[in-house]
Image 1 (tube, one colour):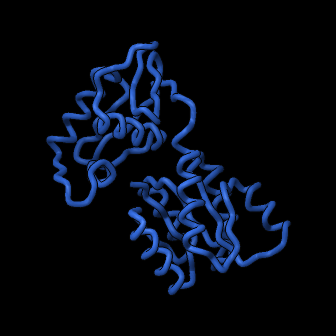
Image 2 (cartoon, rainbow, N blue to C red; image 1 turned 135 degrees about the vertical axis):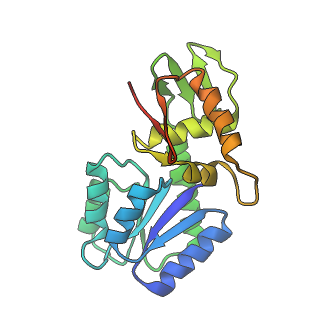
Image 3 (tube, rainbow, N blue to C red; image 1 turned 120 degrees about the horizontal axis):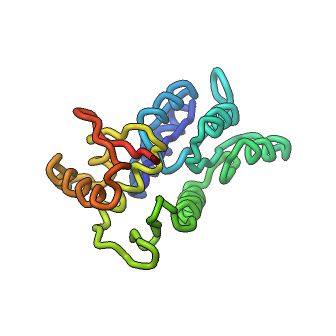
Length: 217
């Protein structure tokens, strides 16, 4: 299930969002200020950002602008009490995917999150050298021939590619590929790495004692 970063400086609403999203099945991490959220975005790969606009130190707009300039394309939804169209336009100009005005209807928020995540998944095939990756069918192709690669190996490939050259720790990989309660081990992770290295021997690098990273050679 998708991992969401919630940035909201109202403690009660922050907790309400966390509880709601976890009940919906998402993995949720929360921050109360943009500096903490920025640090968390560097250490964890998220599938969606849920940002308040009016925050201490700097606005949610400013934070998303920083992330976009750094190459972070993670989808983002702004939650705000601002009513003016100028703010609405600014949010989208900074790279937002959606925008909701407070007070937030949680059921509507859930539907909007699903829609944004679906749009993210339904992108065109990724081209990876001689190979292409169908992110919907979770299939890797050499020209038009599908390769014998398991779904979890494909999930691992997506995770590494989307990290844009950053190291993804083994613990982070296991938390994303295996649901809570499932058995995840370094041995099973190595099985999926081995599957991928059969086709991408120069691209998947082992960072000893830490994890793995994708190198677009």
